[in-house]
Amino acid sequence: MAPLKIGVLLSGGGRTLENLVDEINAGRLGAQIAVVISSSPDAYGLERARKHSIEAHAIELRRHRGPRAFSEAITRSLRAAGVELVVLAGFLKLYLIPFEYAGCVMNIHPALIPKYCGKGFFGHHVHEAVLAAGETESGCTVHWCDNEYDHGPIILQRKVPVLPGDTPDTLAARVFEEECKAYPEAIRRFINGTS
Image 1 (cartoon, rainbow, N blue to C red):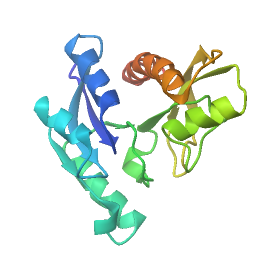
Image 2: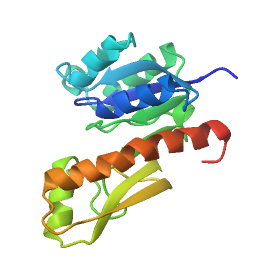
Image 3: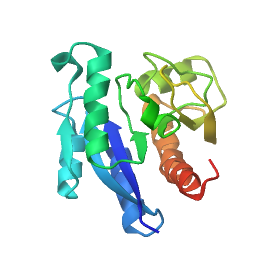
Image 4: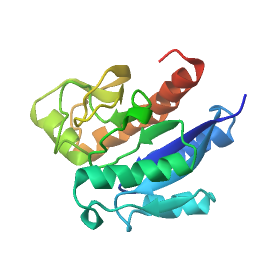
């Protein structure tokens, strides 16, 4: 069976991209990353992609006439690369999903949705909110995307304890360890038709 062609959308450092590349190279994920698209030309994730000889480029919202034109530019790039599954990996803009990719766009969020999600809840903002609320557990959620931030059916979640003395950094590190397991598992479920 031919590997699943994935398109990765990111806005930052690309650690999730790196994890997916590692899983593919280790033979644990039957996929190929066909293209990486960043919402920022300065994202280190673009450099990571190029290091692995993956097609990579930036598509910036400010260079388009609003979210719809921005999303259409992304879709053209995904289509040109033959992408079958779109994976959001720290993508901080709203991608308006076209009909052809409905049910084929997933996201990972560093909290247990429906808590601590939505516009403005990303990165350390999430972990700071979890700690401020005195939660005893957190984790990550992989979910199908619709046209709202951090919304859509949940595919899977992985939990971690919130420990006494945790900082946003220590909690983020523990959650990211689980993200590195959860995202490949969600993609495998898609490949196997069980997601």
